[in-house]
Length: 191
Image (cartoon, rainbow, N blue to C red; front, side, top):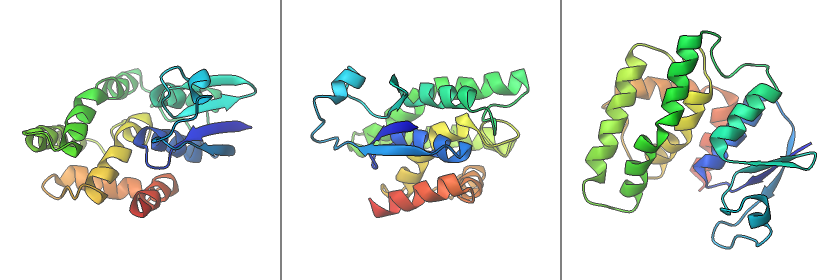
């Protein structure tokens, strides 16, 4: 049985929860208070960050790596495209996620100019989605999961209107039809 060291409000943890739900993997949750992290968490992950998964005594931190691991360990349904080009493009999006998250967190902190920088990232995603239903290619996958938790929080917690980006808006709506993302949307609404 997998144990997920989780924090409900953490979007990185949301990535792990969505992957686990997509794969239909049963797991136990250990909720971590991010304002008062237990000392033993640093034994699992020296940075003290969540998510962390543990399976049969084997421990793995970092949400993007956890997603890759779960996708390989539990191959059905696949969360990367079969096509090597689509797969590489999707991995590149996950790799460049910091370009998206930096203005998001700057916006949350109220930094000057962060709103326009975040809007540039939303426009970038909108352009990508104008030609594809999913960031991961022809099917929902790890690239979509990499970004969705932040978009749900931007929309529902920060009040960012997504309507100026119609392809992005349609993608979020499509994703929210999936039980894994709908469950996350409910968690965000309760924050």
